[in-house]
Amino acid sequence: MKDSINVLISENDLQKRIKELAEEIKKDYEGEEVVFVSVLKGAVFFTVDLMKNYDGDCMIDVVRVSSYVGENSTGKIELKIPLKKEHIENKNIIIVEDIVDTGRTFNYLVKYVNEMHPKSVKSCVMLDKPSRRVEEFNPDYTGFQVEDLFVVGYGLDYDEKYRNLPYIGYIKN
Ligand code: IMP
Ligand code: MG
Image (tube, rainbow, N blue to C red; front, side, top):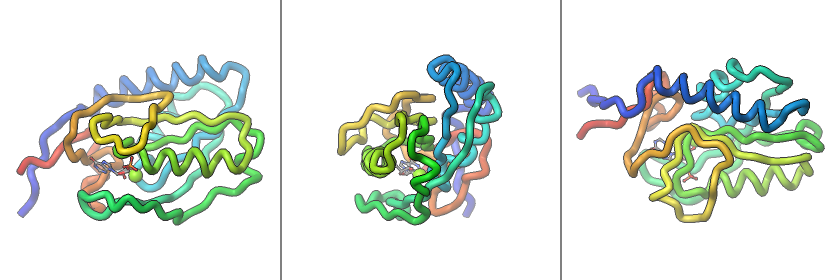
């Protein structure tokens, strides 16, 4: 049977907030070039829209890590597609993620990026679920804070499904 999805954040609200985030980042990096490092696969949709709204010098790179099987975080982070040091060294890096949950992925990625000696590192997340934190982590730029719900859509999946929804929703049981 097809799951039924409730809308949590509409497409319109998402796009409006992404435009604001892009403008905020642009102000903070006036005159500097930034590299948006998109965390595959979930952050792809968000990264594309963020960059389309970003009116400044920027580049894109990707990294792939995974930690989740179904709804349960295994706590283990695996690096599946690495970054190249020459693309990170001496650059202003903004790691772009779909959601911060336990905080493990971000802490792992910030440490990983820092080992490549960037000029600076910041974090930008579409959603933050602070109630689920296991490791301390505060994103520099946040789209929306959400309560403890398993959310899908706009890149976020449940066993690889629902990434294509243009809004953020949750599965109605
Ligand atoms: P963290 O390491 O626990 O912060 O997990 C971050 C990753 O878990 C995200 O990049 C997502 O892939 C996944 N994740 C966490 N919460 C959700 C959710 O509500 N829906 C879908 N994926 C989630
Ligand atoms: Mg993810």
